Amino acid sequence: MKTSTPYTRFQSTLHKVLKRIQLESGQNTLFDEPQYAHKNNIVITGDDGLQKTFPAFRIQYNNARGPFKGGIRFHEDADEDEVKALAALMAIKTAVVNIPFGGAKGGVQVNPKGLTKKEVQEVAREYVRVFQEHLGPDIDCPAPDVNTNPDIMAWMRDEYEKLTRSYAPAMITGKPLSFGGSLGRDTATARGGFFILQEMVDRLALDPSDMRVAIQGFGNAGAHMARFLHNEGYIVVAVSDSQGGIYSPEGIDPVRIAKYKEKTGSVTGEYCEGSVCDTGRMNMDDVKKITNAQLLELDCDILIPAALDNVITADNAERIKAKYILELANGPTTPEADEILKKNDVRVIPDVLANAGGVTVSYFEWSQGRSGEQWTANIVDERLKRVMLDAYKAVRREARRKEMTYREAAFSVGIKRMMDAMAVRGWL
Ligand code: GLU
Image (cartoon, rainbow, N blue to C red; front, side, top):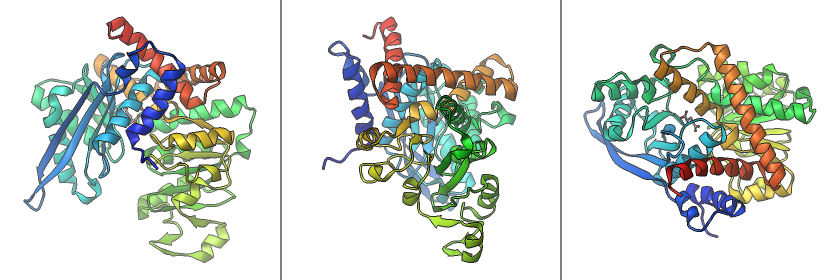
């Protein structure tokens, strides 16, 4: 079997949709490769005095609609192909929510958990040093992604301002509140997905208290999502992190799990220390330990992949029991899995729509950075809701009119908006 990569998986959906919207010949090629692919090595001196070298990328896919925008991930698997796919998804995503940005992504091939805080700071600052000329509020505005956080954004902004001798809060988003961040940015990805799920559940006249939800990933997106859903009356039956998860048909309390995760480092921490679990207590609470693979196949109504890509594949898609999938992670479902899910009537709300709340509040942060305004939490929440519901409506309408899946429809809406801007610029 031909092995796929993140970028070939992206292209598979892209080409399918480009065919449906029937471009004139030659226009397809505009989408095939990113506009710029910047690569460099990040070299730091570790705390032990030895040099450490990490490959780093900033891939700028398309800026027809505005400055390049997208996070930077620190991950040992972050190679050029993956970052390229994520950059392309960002361009579609900013177009789907109709905010004035293009799409880009950054990555450093490093496991930050193996570095000291000082070394992580060095990596962050060096990243800005090597890519400085390609960054800036009107050029390319990064943000957090997997394994990067507000502290890292603050170091990057500081380094950029030092190098350019400027005041540039809008050069990066996801910053700490005390250093130009926006209220609501930390919860934005989950909040945006929550608004869409709520709207879908309302429209289908479903009752949240009948909805059993399984969430893979308990980082920023997954943990906040679990809390929003629990507070709204949904039954969160399972959560997991990279070490595994827990399942209870009666529902678990995500707030309690979050506390134990903070204390012990894992979501199973309330019941297990490493591989040793208190089975007595687990039986009493009707809780079972599960693997990440088992979580995806649980008997539930809504499945939320909120961790890494490529987890719902041709190998397990047939066994997925959920009727709805909300992709808070980027790229969790392969094109082959998409076909199987479609055949089985599983509705997938795709990443480029479901997790666009993060970049939407990044846009609000960027606007505040440029204007000097500070919005209240209520304003952020209201505006985020409006943006997300407008995007959802546009995708739903396209899906219905063209008999497309929601992923195809989201790509279609996004690509058309990108093409409008490209046409005005004379690129087409
Ligand atoms: N990394 C996030 C994403 O994949 C946020 C990007 C941003 O805020 O620019 O959407």
